[in-house]
Image (tube, rainbow, N blue to C red):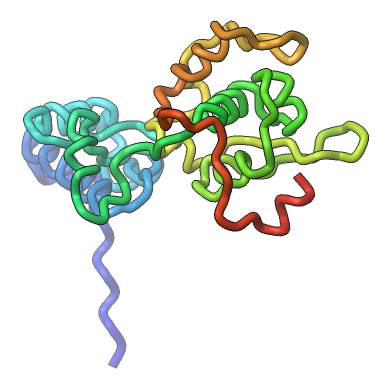
Length: 232
């Protein structure tokens, strides 16, 4: 016996009064975002509502209703996602086994390297070292890669064809950025590879992404360094 064909999904809900239609669209969109472990693309959400739906206004209405809740809907990594409000990050970190309570702690040199990659990508390890005025070791890049915030990019067109590093989708998700265009303005890094980085620039790099530094730690070594890092 053949299965009955599923009913066509009714996006428009034309049989409902305008107010009820809007509320149903809100429920659909909120349910889709809630159920997804990853940011949901606008195109996906648009497939759940009618063509007449103003999606930005719909999301704003959902967030208005969430105003008293400890979470909100944010635009991140090209989509939208539920995120705990920043004021509750410390609460989540206090939980046993908490794994997703904001960015991890970074050492000073990891912070410098990650910020510089974000603004100057694609960029090689040697160029990073010149940019921040410190040696950026393979271990530093290895830890950032293991966290998932950077990845090998194209080979640089220079002798030896070294790897040039770029940030990842995980980087956008971790720092709640919709895209790289949402990075804070940082004109001080323009043409920075041609000059040394003084203490003022280091401070700006530390603060650019709101990264955390571990007190008294200048460098971080990986417990195990994978063979692939030998070619960095």
